[in-house]
Image 1 (cartoon, rainbow, N blue to C red):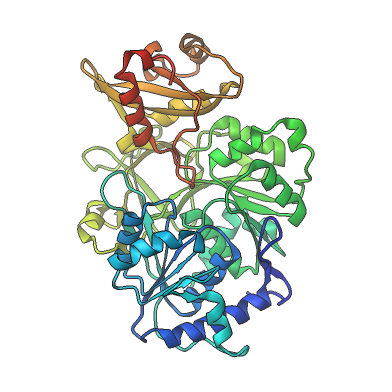
Image 2 (image 1 turned 90 degrees about the horizontal axis):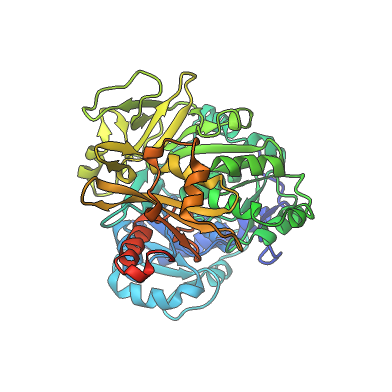
Length: 514
């Protein structure tokens, strides 16, 4: 790829602040890397970033990249002890952080003796280096010191219990064929010749990170938002003529929840590509996004451990709305039953195993790596099936499956139906303990503002849309007024919500209204 023009905008906040061109970024990156090397021993191997989205985040990432450091993005929603665990486990030699987290850094530093330098990205903190001061230490024409480090990425998965696992992917030159195939499958090629990415999802998540990596190679402009706001998002699309972005389904749904007359007041004709991932995208959200932006929506099923596994293109998006598409370039997918025997028949669910772009392993957890493998194939515990045309459908996470009276029920299938109810804003379906059946299905519903529904009316609406055995009983539908607990990446924290339901329903007066 040819380097972008130096005066092309590299990154900016959606409100117009912190703008930096590609030329300015390269000079600043090189000066910081040059100075930072003087503060650190030559044996350093790893860097981490603990900050919200910003151009400074992007510059700090570039510094890690040009120094050949293995990189770990850190989820800034975690509490200090969790941050300290990740910083220590990833063996970070240098940690870049936002000044808004200075108080947490003071608490973390005594617990992380391996760190050799703390760098504040947007201010001055006592006992820490400053990004601006590092840039000013070096001459304008400074160059990063030469090195033989291999780089790579170590991203931490949330997990369902215990400490997060570090998913390690070694560095190295990109495969040109894979890179081109990915750009086509993800629709990024549609954004050429000048991709302009809107970045609303947090950069510690795998998908925004992947879009950022591809975007850098294409000389993209990145428009960052610190947090998601539907109106601000549409304003940014219009102002910067954004032509592509990634968003998890929950954020796409929030765009659609704006009144139609308000949405139509913005010019979004520049958008050529939208990618949805991180959770199953409900059918009605797919339809709404197509109605709003045209046939530009792509859906990806993947995981930090597996890379992009399957991609659904806009052409088939509404023809097979519950599918996540076909296997991506270079990816092999097999399904296996409980006895680890390969399933070859269509429409038969099994655990999903993949190979082709798997991680090199879980950092310092060889046992966990081996548990997830079947020969050369890797699994994160998802269950799915292929239809007769070779399209993949995700039934659910194996751990989320509800087993009621010996029958397997996949919450994602029930959620997809309930999401289509016009008065339902959000849905979570999961199993609760049941003395007779082992588990029973529970559906938590958050209604759109002003809506009034009863459990009976919801079940009547579902009649004929899904098998009755998969639905909750009337007493197992709860209505909620607060937003459901989710990660910033849009993943529903079902374990937290399930515990809330169990606690609330233990009090008789709380059973009907939560």
